[in-house]
Image 1 (cartoon, rainbow, N blue to C red):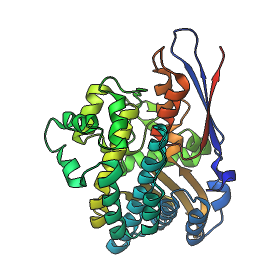
Image 2 (image 1 turned 60 degrees about the vertical axis):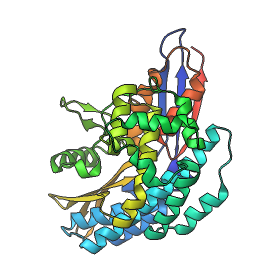
Image 3 (image 1 turned 60 degrees about the horizontal axis):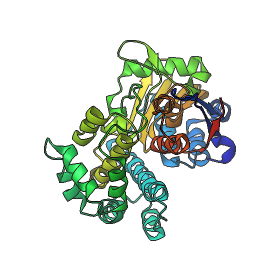
Image 4 (image 1 turned 30 degrees about the horizontal axis):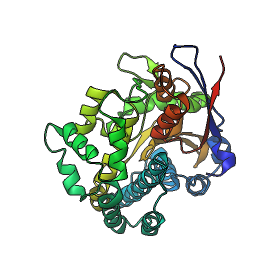
Amino acid sequence: MSSSLEGRIDISLVRHGDEAPEARIVSSRPQVAQRLMAGRTPAEAADLAGMLFTLCGRAQRIAAEAACAAALGESASTDTTLSRQRKILAEMAQEHAWRLLLDWPSRQGRAADPALLLALRRAGDNALVLADTLETVLAGPLLGEPVANWLARFSVEAALPGFDAWANGRGTPTAALFDELGQGADIGISHVPLLPAVDGLHKNGIQWLAAQALETPAFCARPEWPAADGQRRPAETGALARRQAHTPVRQWLAQRGRGVGARMLARLLELALLPAWLRSAETTVLRAWTLPDQIGVAGVETSRGLLLHLVRLVDGKVEQYRIIAPTEWNFHPAGPLAEALVSLPADAELHAAARQIALSLDPCVDYGITLEKP
């Protein structure tokens, strides 16, 4: 995505004595889908989505293709669906690995290994080559042992103690980073609802979401989801929402809360699972829904969370187009970041803690953190 379309997120924090900090999150991310897509054919809209949004560009293009096809009442063949899912998974693997090999070492004052990053980039979206390359990278600086051995630690009910034993061994920089988090309460706890993963979305929820987005374009900048109690609330999306039921993540959430460590664990676990998914393409990361009045919706799972494209066609051309990106869920002014920031204890070093929380939610755009005087 070019910088003019990317925008930025500004986070301001104010602490009044020993009270919890106040947090203000302001996004300058423009909502440009309607202006850019209106009047175009489905093929033109898909091409434009792939060119404009360079971050997760494959996911953007596939979402546009699937949404427009759904609006026309068309369904993809099995081969097309498998091909799309492999491309989405390859992009997810690249983005996960990039963050784990760049962001995490920087937190420890370490430089990323350019050879590893180059090897992953060279694999591109060749799913089988990427799966092999990713297993090599995981077995080295990330896990320090074969992926199968690491995952086997979680095959028993006491999965979290097995993970802690791996972290305590500090055999890799990644393990050391988890060891530094400790085994107490997580950093920056949030309780906003977790957005359902794409394979758990129901058509009635999609219909509700489409109605809000198409009738009120501003909804896409501050999306909400109907919670279990029927109230509309901000939600969190990402690897944690997708992996919340996996034993070590589930146990982490129950014992330590949903914060930085939980998101880091979910991302690392998902990356370890991706080589097998790349080979089989059986994991659902793409769905599309045909709604009345030539409305189509597509949901694609990206490394940062659920990406939604919504389109209404008239006479074969785009009449309305909306995009709800993961950043708009996670950096909602009253969303998971905001709630995590105001939960920080009085003795927390605000700037460092805020940066940790923001990185765990992966803003994908430039952001700034400012500490303001009361």
